Amino acid sequence: MKNKYIQYYVEGETEVKLINVLKTELKVIRAGKVQKMNVVDNMFTDARLMTLRAGTIVVLVFDTDTGNVDTLNKNLEKLRKCSAISEIVTIPQNPNLEGELVYSCAIKSIRELLDSKSNEKFKSDIIRTTNLTSKLMRHDFDIKKFWSHDPPSLYKGIKNMADKIRLIG
Image 1: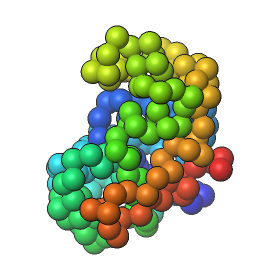
Image 2 (image 1 turned 60 degrees about the horizontal axis):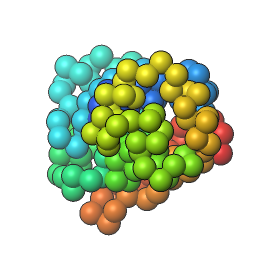
Image 3 (image 1 turned 180 degrees about the horizontal axis):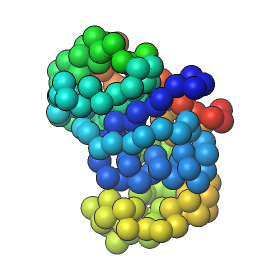
Image 4 (image 1 turned 30 degrees about the vertical axis):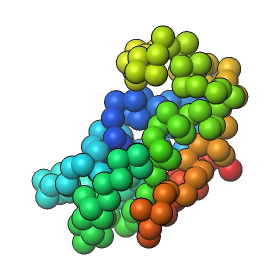
């Protein structure tokens, strides 16, 4: 994966924030450009794919709690046909970002990570927080546990390829 362009497509603003911290501050995943795009709900457009440089590795980070795999499979097929893409890396979040963080940190509830008032407030709290790195470290964040589960059987044929972007592990 050296000397290649990496393009992350992630579900929402919370994933954008977290991936930026993981790659720039904690340096536990490969550097790359991060864009918000829910690949389970929305199709890639030709215009979006035309902006990719030759040799780009596309990393798709998506939740598995919706059970909607048809659009994801169509997106994967479209990406496979794009000549600019050298590799597609799929990273299913099982069942979602919050579940991954609870599993990879020493917490029992997602509210504990940022002292959120509720699970619903967590998303706005993570976007607003300025010290996400220290919060993750305080709760023993383990990159080896993060994105480590295989997706549910509904997602058969879609592998968890997170090891391809981890720098530690």
